[in-house]
Image (cartoon, rainbow, N blue to C red):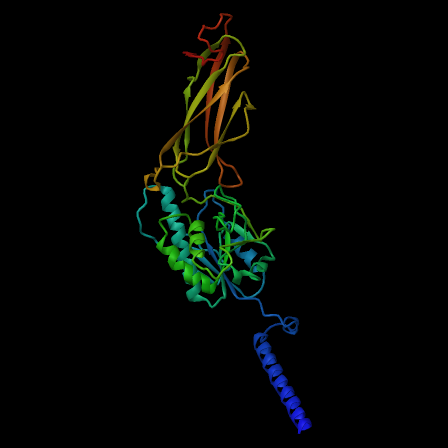
Length: 390
């Protein structure tokens, strides 16, 4: 009896093992249906379907980048579709699988910066929702049109299901922090990958908060509502995307550019100093500064740079709702050891939100310096500000 039982048990075990093997092979065959021989024989799950969403916009430089972005997506291979968000008044780029016209979003904003920021958030929600509706992709990527993906960008999909957002580009903005995942890390939203299920959960949250913060901060906040995930983002080193940073016409600096006026000394004036060690101040004002726009300024004296470019940014209002499109910032230099005779100062203002550092304003001040042997006035201070003699 024991031998019979043993034989029956062994036979049952073999039968179950056989059924299990057939079931496994059946599942594997279904997953590998239509795939390459090597991919099927490896037993690995096929790469996920991805739809890449590219919002296009006019650039102040006049260049169009979408074609490069589309080509870079294709270089990664796999089952990948491309969706482009475009303005109906602009010729849409070729090579995409889906085209979505940009909506005219209606909301109030006191300054151009907040208008641009809120439009960007709503554009994000619009195209990402369209991707969920029009495709069956397992993952959805946001890719700015002035960025390109590296050929191996699909490596980002390997662990994407563990995270709410997989960032393919490191942060390059002033809000970046290094404490992730404990603090907001300033993703920048150049190239970000979401799983379909997570994106469907966070989009309504982002839409509901669109007036409160920039897009990357809203994504971070929404991602923190997903407690089953390990963190809001995963950075790749080296990055899997490159960002050109070409400024859009409707950003914080899309309107009239800043201008520079000198306050003192007056142009074509004569500045009398006691000796070459005397110091005096040059003051100027930059007009038309826009809230949150990042600039730098530099000066040359008779063609010689005075220093490296210095940061120039308008002071933030206590409340964002008090922002303005017409701010003024005063800047100045303290000069000494100047040669006697005609002096020319050229002051330039450059934008700092792209790699090009384009000069957006320039002003020239010409005056004459003379020296006198008269002793300085006794004011108890060795340094003094010279008065311009017109």
